[in-house]
Image (cartoon, rainbow, N blue to C red; front, side, top):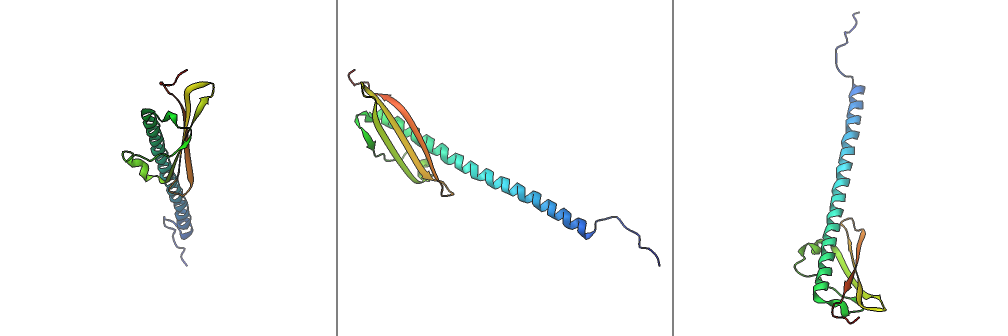
Length: 137
């Protein structure tokens, strides 16, 4: 009997091991891309919420809503079209005297909450001080 000559190449076990290693590598890359896309979406939503909050505070400053005490209702202006992409957007504004001894200085707290695309509740709170220039000292 003649011995069979071993030719170059892979046997079935080596090929199966290579496929498993390659599959694990591809799966890892897919998971990393998925998490990156999800993080990008969450950051985009936060950016929209911050822009909306800043715009609302500027509108309050321009309208002079400093006479209001307690909670006031805010309607999102039509010009803030991007804010409509936030699911279940809820906006709360609280206005109170910053220092009861000093009239005319108000603390305004604006809270935006929404659900992100993963249905997790997200929230951003901005607090600022506004001076009522018409107030008597």
